[in-house]
Length: 112
Length: 113
Image (cartoon, rainbow over all chains, first blue to last red; front, side, top):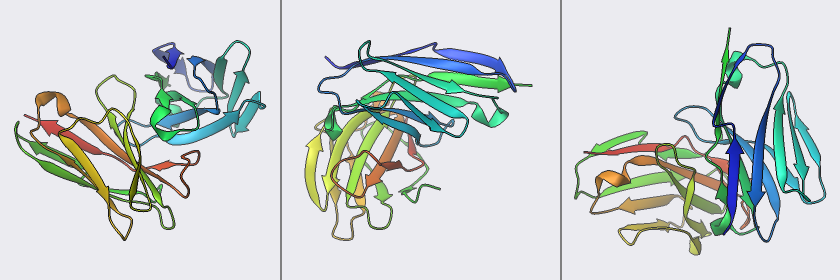
């Protein structure tokens, strides 16, 4: 059974600090691994998409890493801002829409 | 703004009722996907349409149905509603059949009372 597990469930950090969110996935067959940002009550917005051959990808202050051997991914946020407060969702993609596996997300709160 | 429009934004209805959620995809996108997000749960894929035809089905209940019209907008029909159907319902669209670059709408929050 395909699974995506994220940790921590929630995180509170001070503005300006860095943080790293973790994702362990079991997805077969593996097509790509994605990270989405979801503001409360809004739709998810894609941050990064990584295929098997990519082990790092950046989008501004967001950097995702992928270790296909250990089936782990991380999302690193640099110099956090209040607007980074959101849920961050890791998604495993088999290449079939019906087989997307979503994690339950890490809820990040950035405070002053 | 993702370009995907969902209406209504909020919906409150009673158990046993039927509702219709509407989604207009981004201009040029042929695929529409529907997802359900219950409280504290991950997004669950419901169904995909591509250019008017059903392309993939997820854990969609028999009480739920969807269709995509010739102008490519889609509707998700939820009937015999139960309290447990209360959730956020998201629509996403993509150009092709694959949803690698799918863009999500703002969602419809359904509350069944």
